Image (cartoon, rainbow, N blue to C red; front, top):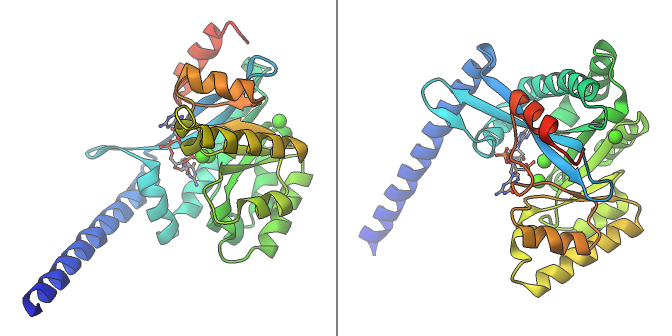
Length: 279
Ligand code: C2E
Ligand code: CA
Ligand code: CA
Ligand code: CA
């Protein structure tokens, strides 16, 4: 038993060391990525089923490392949050998305908003509102062209101040979307207290609904509830025609997912919108 215990400890330490080294590597990599500007934004089209148009986009961050290749934001965003680098990176995302939506909206006037993911630290530690106002003024962008995506995890350690920040942002005319809805601990309570315009049903629900009538009932209820509260419903991660049909029959407002389009770089997006006969 002693032997097994010692082995377990060794194994545990080994894993810790691996995770620690990986974290260090990513952290150093992120600092270089900031310095040499190895980030790009891609845009995933969101299709409004009610108006039959691509009215909005979600901006998603990409990091192309010269040796390691493409690194997923799911991997590096948590590291950037832990090390504080998310502040600089998040600010770059904010400025780039604002600059790009101006151009895109100018060329395709029916595209009327870009959704930007912001992290808790960004909303808490920076003078976020001031920065947002400064950038909107700098690029002469109307606040209604911007949507801020937040998640329930933002409120894990309390959030009275955060609530006020969000309310102010919404009052400016920027819309707010609650991302990954249904994956948190007290989702219903957030629908009650948060100043939001849109609810994004998490893709895990969308992907499970095809073969699971219970999930279908949950999704239908979330859609009806959100509508009763005056929120627009976005379904994320739509990959199949069947998912689309189900969501459409449940009165989903907006769909986003590979079925409609993958996230696209600027050139691909222009091509997509040029060929988009529905728009
Ligand atoms: P998210 O905000 O929930 O973004 C949606 C993710 O689902 C994106 O992954 C997108 O590429 C992917 N996706 C879209 N349609 C489909 C589909 O039909 N099927 C499947 N399987 N996936 C789909 P991505 O771009 O890898 O981003 C992962 C996460 O990283 C995001 O999840 C978000 O939490 C975070 N992230 C991305 N960009 C930023 C950013 O600029 N700032 C911050 N703070 N976080 C970001
Ligand atoms: Ca998002
Ligand atoms: Ca808008
Ligand atoms: Ca999401």
